[in-house]
Length: 252
Length: 343
Image 1 (cartoon, each protein chain N blue to C red):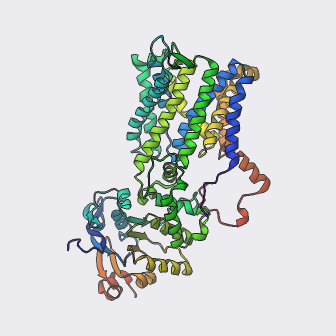
Image 2: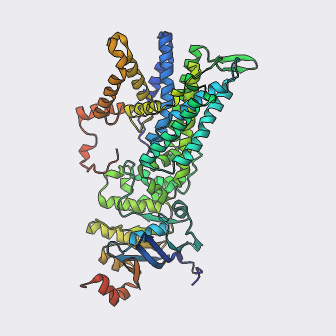
Image 3: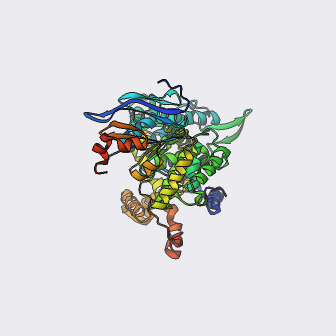
């Protein structure tokens, strides 16, 4: 069980998080592989977002470890993990509303070529970040929106922009917190197509409430209840699991 | 098609006109006017330094007078007794002293956020204030005089003597122009864009891979250095420093200048400094207000409250506000929802 498998890009082992007496995440282990969408589902308060926050380094775990590309990154700060190839999107929109769509992407891409000491050079002349921004925006389907202020985008476009900003940093692992939330049917289809395309080069963790979408796109599903994993496996395995039916799917 | 920062030539023209007007002003001015405008330009440099923190990075520092005072005190304390000191050395030393204190203050205070940051910066400034107020170092409440003003000499020949009011005026103007230009360039660089990102959403910046603390600390130290430069100019111009230069009144005044002028624009700091100082002169004027002039703070305060209430975007936003009133909202024709638009 060592990290010799090169396709395992992110691994969490025995991750726990306690807030005082409350155990938000309890001994969760999971592997994210390149070429795979790994969905984490569970009711509200099951600890999904806390898990993403721990994996991305936003909050430290109370116990357990996180490995990124075979390295133990448990003690790394969030920015350091991000520079090493870990990208995340947020449940609520966290774009920079006052900036243009392009500048949102460009600033994200700049994280890869920060060079803050080049104070005399305009950021718009930074080749690496401008081309990465164009590529990311095009990939997320925003190529014709580059000059619009991000705050004026529709909700679905803002979710696309979240993904574009994530991609602009050239990550290997994507942690996506409810990318489909509040999207219409057509936008959902476009996003799912994008995720299917992205998974060939990335390892994707998907936290999502839209069960139809999850069972369509996920290769592996982990089900969490009250902070603990009760089942992990293929969509078929999870669908037929008695524990899952009892605890989560209920009437299905 | 690349998005460029909305580069509006009218802004450039405005700033060039302002600086041009300041350059020809001495032709028409008496010694009182020259001194007043010199003072205002010093305040403008000071306001620009705070704009880098508050307007550009979103860090509300309420202890900026500390750096101003340290720059001013350094210019006096480091001057050799009765001889004129060397301008480049004194300038660098004053700016350096302010930057050092900014490094110390920033390293600790930037670990806090929001209202705590405001309070901690205030506390550090009060600390500096009491050090010069209550120790022999700063000469107590009486302050200290600068006996001989610094000169710039080359091979024993004085090129620039700041003891002369005209030289002082143009040197201050040159500093103002240089600081404005430096900040304008800095803010469009990668560093400046990162600061804008930190202001808009620091958490997102961290998630993207920016270690925001060093960025904020660098901004804090640069800002402290520029405030130190303003303090240096002030100390040299007046030839006198006292602890009031570090008091929270001044920290508050400079904050009001940039709010009055309009946060988020370098022009705002420039306009705000002039507006604030001229309003102060206006309400202090006995020719206009007679005996009531001694209550000038009342008039000034009410005016500031009224202008903040009526001009939420500051004086910089006035042309836009009028355009909106006369022509209608820009971009309204697009029919797009404006929810969440940050501006």
